[in-house]
Image (tube, rainbow, N blue to C red; front, side):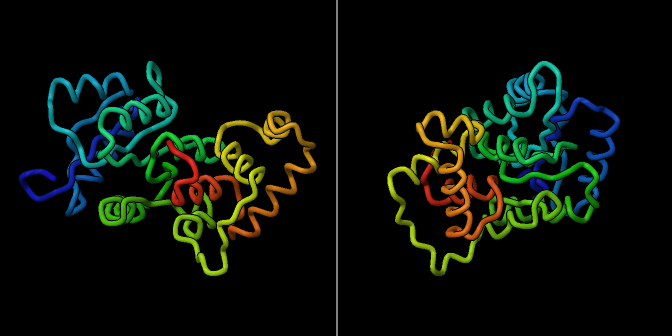
Length: 217
């Protein structure tokens, strides 16, 4: 938070026109002010080294030259873990979302969101520590704060191994090979865990595992 009592935001995006428009929008919000804009992760490092001031939130694009969003998120978590990362991208596939969450992103938004949604996301990041868009996945909100009534965290050894591997970037076929099990058996583990944990996709599985400290970033 700066001297004006506003939370500070940094925009990491190589599209200058979009970044400038986004900066103008965020500066119109009552509780937020853009600290700086960087073109990629390496540029971000230079800004932090030269300027010294750390933002409360970093809006992070994924597809950037020199140092992309995944690499940048990893660097932020290793060097400045208190900064909250909000991914803002055109990519909406499950694997990309999963990978950004594993790299430390506390939220994920698509670039075509309404300004009010962005304002809400920024507020919830500071108040709750996370924000996930309904447009990315309607089930993510339940995965983050699931109704845990009736859920028994009593995993068999193979189930726990599968759960941990499923939170990696491995395909289900690769998991089957590593565990020396048939793809049908792996599919059975997947379906059973989804049902027991009341989740509907692999992203929700990762969030659940992170929340319960079953895996580490």
